[in-house]
Image 1 (cartoon, rainbow, N blue to C red):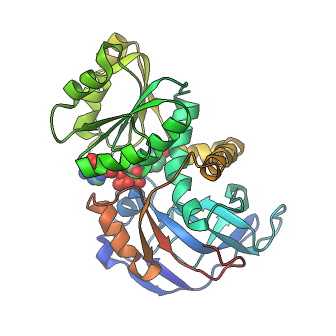
Image 2 (cartoon, helix red, strand yellow):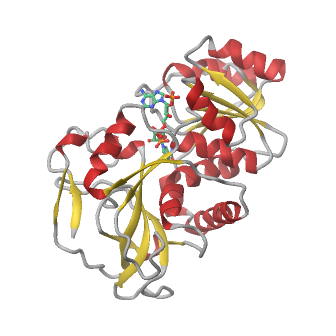
Length: 333
Ligand SMILES: NC(=O)c1ccc[n+]([C@@H]2O[C@H](COP(=O)([O-])OP(=O)(O)OC[C@H]3O[C@@H](n4cnc5c(N)ncnc54)[C@H](OP(=O)(O)O)[C@@H]3O)[C@@H](O)[C@H]2O)c1
């Protein structure tokens, strides 16, 4: 089978598409014929050896896939060949087939295109877990999303709106903010155009913001936290800016607010039933039109490295999807 391979840590341009042996599922595993794979910032980090989890070299990057089950390992029950599924893989999804543990599969309902399913697992899954389980967002609360045009960011805008929140979207340029507006953001803040704290005070007044989704970190975190309200929840999602912020601990005290960590990958392993329920909710919202995930670019597997380059260069908007195989049982990738 064809796979994008990382033989030495480095740039996307060092990755090569090559033939590798078709993997076989072991006990408790299934093999997915990959229709599509979503691209995420961790793909750019993992090939540079900058991610917290690191597969041994050589490896195939790709953290999420959707496709059809095409081989079933010993002891696996409750699934059939041809089932439409999505899975978080950490690595391995940028290939024609990927083997995953059967208990990690998400059933993809009819009507949900596999290319969209591939794009939703990590971004929308993280956004929903963060907002629902970690922050318990209530209708009418105000949610600030930093990096609001990125994968997790734009998904957080959509999910927060679907949960009935008022959304302040913050991003680095007017065209990126326009994407958040199209997904329902109520207020737009350009953090490259001026002081973030001043803009947030204008947007929210003295009441303060209820929930902050931060997949960016860096210099945005402290002014954002200073804008939080009483009983606010600051969701630490990621550090796309490359710097881990240090928030002075007098601030949570003075604000009577919480800093809440989000570790979605571990959540999917420790609470698989809740993860499946979350994804079922997200698919239902997709099917009734409440979510319209933005897939801004699609690439064939041969050009997957270009997609990772876009992520690395801060040029991606919403999600980028790699179309891998179009010849599954239902031919509807
Ligand atoms: N905690 C969890 O469970 C979890 C789950 C999934 C992802 N994550 C993390 O969440 C973060 C975002 O992932 P993603 O896939 O959504 O990434 P993404 O699509 O690249 O979005 C990141 C956003 O951050 C902003 N940004 C600011 N400075 C940046 C920089 N120096 N480089 C790149 N982006 C920068 C960009 O928006 P502007 O250009 O508008 O500023 C961009 O839209 C990553 O750190 C990832 O590891 C965490």
